[in-house]
Amino acid sequence: MTAAVVTPNRARDGLRRIRPASDLPALADLIEVAYRPELALTGSNLVERLRQYASMAAFLGFAGRLAPLLDGFVWFEDDLLVGNVTLNRDATISGGWTISNVAVLPEYRGRGIAGRLVDAALAQLDDAGARCVRLQVRTDNAAAVGLYRHRGFAVYETTQEMRLAHRDLCPSTPSRDRRIGPPRLGDPKRILRLAQQDQPVALRYLQPLHRTDLGLALWQRALHAAARGLGLDAPRALVARPSRSPVGYAYLAPVGGGTLGLRLHLANDQAQDIAAPLIQASLAGPAPGSWSQVVAEIPAEASAIRSALETLGFEPLRTLYGMIWEPPQPARRRGITR
Image 1 (cartoon, rainbow, N blue to C red):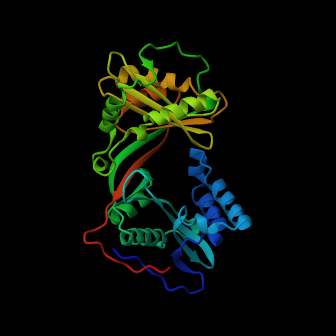
Image 2: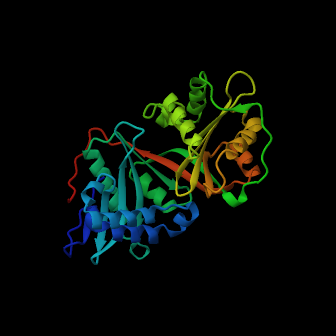
Image 3: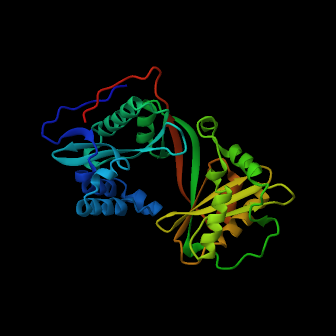
């Protein structure tokens, strides 16, 4: 695989690295057009954030500081920004990166621009010594899935996103379930084992789970309790314990834009019985009006959890492939225009 470098017909045409100082407004326009249905579906505020960055960079002169946050490549044709790929470090994996926002304006699709952008991104990360590169893509986006497979990406997990809008939350307060309560001091090791059973095999050696990944470190629990005491939105952790050992864990945390993210880990033989009460108890915690929707991401094969979510009003949002790319050995060096 090689990255194509196009000889520009005009001064700005072709492939180059993102320049936050000049590209942010056009990049926001591109993302808005290319991802309009997806942004509406997920309630993402990405475009608004990009426009805020653009305004702040223009008036406060700190565009250079945005470069690490907005690394990647853009494609220009007819002096217009028509394509983009964004690169970010993956904080959960040493040497890991993520690719996102692979977008091309509709009228410029079918010309291989997306492929050239991805090639450039992989070449850059290979040169930088990346250990692996991950991305998410909808399972029904056959063109994108094919593009990534052709470049060596492999599916390592399939997840189902489920969404509950605030207006659809049942207003009645559930009766207290004695099996469900906050984590105890001896719970983190057992909860880690529950989470590890849900972790894709491909990630177990790249991304070992730790207590902090699950919000279970003592300092996290103390900080969250203090925030709740002050009336602030804070993550909420609950454990299902029918007997002495935990068999389920729920972690509900703000993820921005009025959205709460719900993570669930349940013992396979207990999921059907305990999933619905655990989810319901989690939803009883947030202050009314402090959120607009809850999004739960679960393994696609977790039918008992999906059934419990649907019983409580959640609806399918998207089905996503998690895909991963690891650089060839030995690494191939490629020239990219700067």
